[in-house]
Length: 440
Image (cartoon, rainbow, N blue to C red; front, side):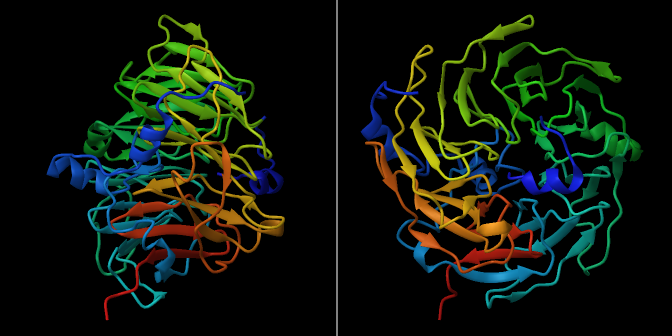
């Protein structure tokens, strides 16, 4: 997520490639295709329940089947909300959560491009950068004023809901909460915090974390995978923690660390035993999730220097392809290039998004299509655009296959793709739901 504007306004401080990947053609051909999954698991995967879709932050809807390369060119605005900022939406059980505060909408509230009325709203004290997360019957939102938990379905008359519990002791958070296995993980101000949400809901009121870890002034959200929490701290280290390392306000130390060249504003993504992360200075890294223990410092499986400006975006990764984004380029690499410290060649890269424009959001992948937000000059003229996710394997430059009309402001919000719709906000103050035209 691009936060250069936020630094200027709020004075926030934050502080290659030659090995041909094995099996590129066959792997790329399989990327982003819906796998064979049981019905219960498929229903869960069809939602986009938190930042980057799931707790591992892969940015990939594995079971989307309505939208495809064949019809993406027909996308149009189905409905809108008159409130929007930089938060990315969440989608769960037919309800869409616009994360400016919380504004909950039926996903089917309209199809004529007009504005919809919310089912309920809830204030969080400031226009939010963070994305909502849905789990254990609650919607969680982290804002500059703290952490809030609201009951799912708390109203349906458009009224305002009050939080079931909060944590307001450590505010100024620009990162998103992550829900996994009954626990919520947040990074705010200077700490990683972990909450047993059942305990917090039972107690109500202000809930203190079960355990914390010092991160410095980080802007990275935490990713959770197989009992481990992965986050980048302010000093430029990827840290791995045990997901339930303590209770009663314990202070935890990392299991292992990976030395990066700089901090990041994005979120790590984890898939098939590999953690992928980019840094602000446009370095891309891949680490094994089990690379060390007892506080060890690990070397990456591979890393590469990207081009095209600084990196603000989070990583997206399917089973075969990992996507990194800089200000002016998208890069796709094969996930098979985990080569013991070796180097990798990009499968494809994008052209610049527009004349004098830049990529402003993180990518979302669904059914062979990559969606991403862009901005024009001076953070204006935002659009949602789409690429063929597997457009090449020979390193060529690929170009967008669809562009939305101008959306106003920059499209800094990362898209969410679920149930045949694509949702995105602009910092011009509007939230959009895109989908296919209604049947005549």
